[in-house]
Image (cartoon, helix red, strand yellow):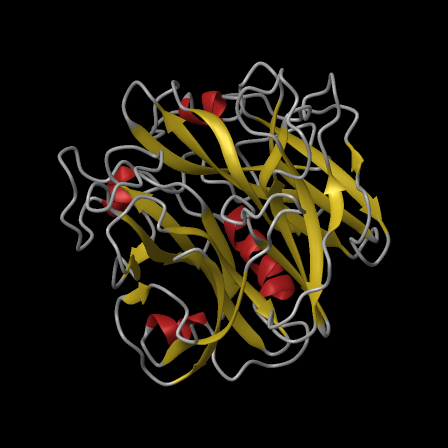
Length: 384
């Protein structure tokens, strides 16, 4: 418990008070419905000609610095796909905005497929982090080679901005499928099975006393269950799943969403997928997607529930230990798998923001005073 409190104190020093000033409202106000998210902007990022597709160029994640937002995302169809890549072929771009996402710079390549490496086919669904102690940018993402097994790869860049190519970690892949989940689920009293694998949609939550805390999803095909977990690392090569504030368990499983106000399909909620965490007023908030049937996207309308729920706790707690209020907190305008995707909570100058992809648009919302509708209905942007 002492370790949890220490982690909380340090993390909140870094995250609870906005480094760019005091916020009028925070997620505690949103939790109590004394604040709501107000629409700010929308965006799409088409692939270069001759392609016109944009729907695959997602996997959004924001890192903010004073006066500027940096947005990392995937890009498909940027060149001819090699014959040895049978599934995905994608790279990562970064771009910036100084007006809350109303306009964006051109994209710059951060990481791209390199033949005969762990990333030779795809780098997707990752997260950036700026370590001001070392003036280093980190990026960790799902990566794919011709074996068609998802892994995690890590990249770095020195300097105050992330604009430019990152250097691949020489130990890539830094996580093989199942490497972390097999250790978490083997712990005493863990609420997951050792069949859990596919560490994916990683998010670097914070850095505390030299360790980076990284969350990620997992999928157990045998049980038809998904979960979200957390591990820490000093270098993205050596990983710990216990100690220093870690719960020694998954942080979200099907037990956390089974009683939400959703008419789940037979078998109920399968668990969690992508999640985003943010600290406010000494509390950790976790916004996470939860589907039924499978963690894969069933895009036929009416077939699959795919919603977002919010949980909170005074530390990084095990599944079943997080407080809940109104869930699901975000629902799709159309019942459809992956109608809502790639959501993020993040802080900018004196404000908290919510982003998600819905109705084929990346949409950004700002937390402002006053109550709002519960649940939030994610649909087309209001200005189209």
